[in-house]
Amino acid sequence: WIPFFSDPPGSDEEIGYTGGGGIINPDSAYGFDGAAFSGDNFAYCYSYTYNYGSYTYNYDNGIRQVLTDVLADGVYTLSVQVGNPAAKNGVEVPNYRVSLYTENEVLLATTTGAVPAGDSWTQIDLVYDYGAAPQPGELGVPLEIRLYAADSGLSGPEVAYDDVSLTFAP
Image (cartoon, rainbow, N blue to C red; front, side, top):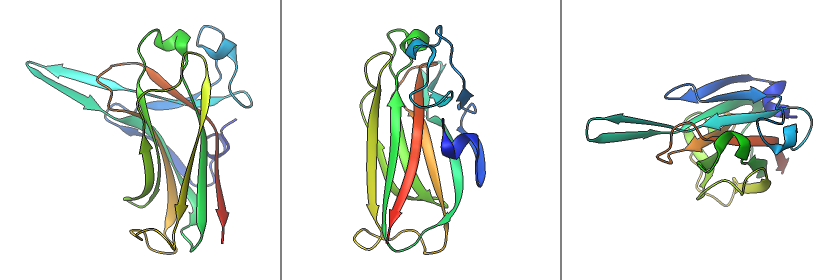
């Protein structure tokens, strides 16, 4: 179950060079023994690489959700399960990035090495304190969650996302 992405309160769309992702109800051929981390569906994003002559171009692809919630003074915790559908990916493992934005300003983001081992999930928790951190976003501006398969130099491998939540404490 993807609360923000399967029943969106705002708008949702794919972002990136080639679109880059969507929502899937997996079967056993996809990975994770045919099950999502929570519920029936999970979001996925795939990486993309384009070779042109001696140049290689790597692209981030992903999905985003613009929330009806707006930036307020307080502490936000963005929690996401990140997974590796090994049956889909084989041995290739892309990088991932989870971000919280206001309009086009990054409030917090993380990019790690690779997704977890095949057919497993790991929880990522990002904390943003509006009062303690630099304040690029303005109060009252809608928040946006972005989930990516990040620049990895690979074409096709997917990152799975599930159980996305954003909590707020004033």
